[in-house]
Length: 335
Length: 194
Image (cartoon, rainbow over all chains, first blue to last red; front, side):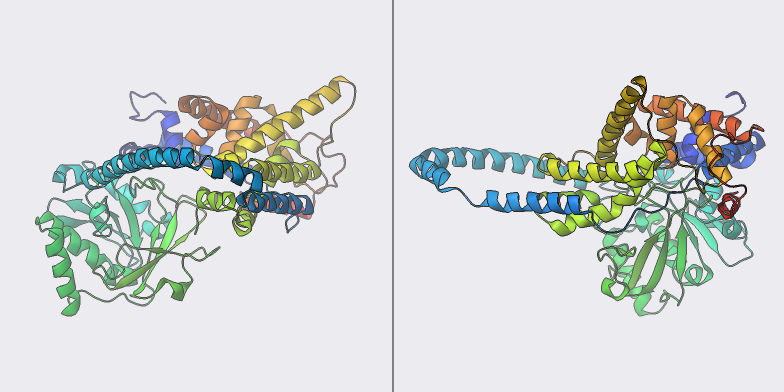
């Protein structure tokens, strides 16, 4: 396979399959992969090796914490508790040189205070200036239409996305690129689908492939369409929030239908600077509720709350459940 | 879900529950790590325990500069290297290390094990860290102290080599099968992954 005919190297193709390429390269890789039988064969080979390796499963070890670890743990925690109590000898020494400690403490306070002020300022500056406003529309558009279609499809397993309707982002909003047959709609969302207070609301690198099931296509996708239209029309965040509130009040925007959910299992997405590709997951939409109703974010619960909407302003709660495989069936990183 | 790093800091602060949660999350992965490299469940159990004992002893020195996952596999790699040194010394002295376990092992797994053994050790380690421990290229690079590009190129080579070994008409080494019966119900498990 020569790079003259292939825009990506073989190693890069492998890195794409491993979810290790940045989004711009991943999109190119995915787009090429869809059209190149030679690369598809290599990808199948690489996946085949991974699947064969996974036949080697290991039985679970015995449950419970072994006694040696329990003992060492108890000892360590005991020592730590003891260390908290000052010894009289040490206390005397501290008492006799209290003024030395007071001066040292004052110096440390001043130094730490200055450091915190500087760090805090830098952090705030970073937060507020990284993506302070909308970038040029070109930065949000994907020049390769086929690449965007392939990326959108990669949100769900092929058995679902191959018959789904595909939308791609144009200069005036989302356009139907391919009509579907099964009621699912796949789309690559952009950064403005983050919560309005997100520091990455205008991050032009963000690409969020999603496949909505029919109930979500009818009741959640309209929000993606509306937010996108408002962004492209140049509305401010405050204007968008007002418009969404009015839309719900007047019932122009629908409430989430029972069973509304979506697939986000693409290894080619880039959800934000903080999590990158993240892990493959499913999302479930319900009318605004407390996260405790799903046991979200509790210890050992696989469910977490996505704060994307949560009443600010959309009256919708979104729960996330990670899954173990990417849409192509390969194993995903452990959370 | 509380992050591993937050749990580690809570444990540093004296929380037993935080340690227990970390133990629950990583006991199986670490056990699998040792098992696959030593082919010996007893030693895998012992070394998993030693890894957690090392975490307890070094808790006060932990700094959240690296992911807990990378930190734990760093400990595991050191323990593994020590174990391998120990057995290599024993072998030089004419003593044998533990025999690989094969009882009840499905044929396809023996095949995978044999193919992995044919790889160069550094490439095998990278492949296993990626496939079984699901570490990222940069995590592997950090653990093995090699550039990320080296991880990528070695991983690619090792996958192609493994494909060729697995694809060849070779059958599992009969010697490895010596203690195992003929086709067992475990072999049926192979087909589930095909």
